[in-house]
Image (cartoon, rainbow, N blue to C red):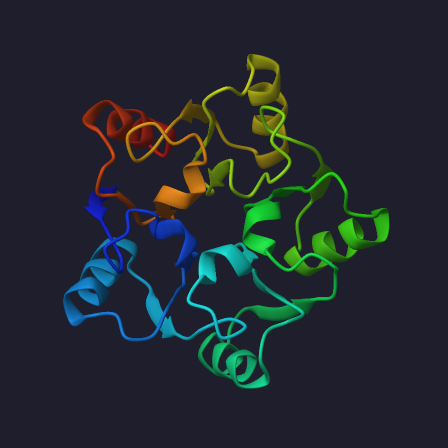
Length: 223
């Protein structure tokens, strides 16, 4: 897998601005051509340029997997229409739950999902149905409730908060059906989603991610 250091708008927190799966990468408008070229070369997807709720923080507001893109109830009509028009071959759905930062509170791949522990059972069920996953659970990672911020999962592997216990890794590996590693990005950040954009084709990490961090990330997502 390709791995490259990357920044966006002079920020190493690339994961808060970008959502990706194996087919589509949703990016803010006005990115320079070189950045868009790097994204396409590494992730090998179509690019969808849009805001969500008039915000550039697409990675914060969007959750999903290779089957579904989930958007918050505050998405604008024009934004929803643009994503649906370009992502024609997967489900694009508004999740009508009180929380709106879906990327921070839903961690999913095509097999399973872990969600914010304060979701109601009905909300959890609605999210699981929208994602089309076999299993969905409420929980935390290393006592962190914003589980979408504390992990990155694909169909090949995953990286989670460096303080996750062996027992948590075992449970999460069973849920997602992949091997997991603990680690950090951007010179010590345990909120790994903020500094990473990953699909099955490639990996982008924040520019301040160190060599030892990169080695662990590569191991986490190796076949």
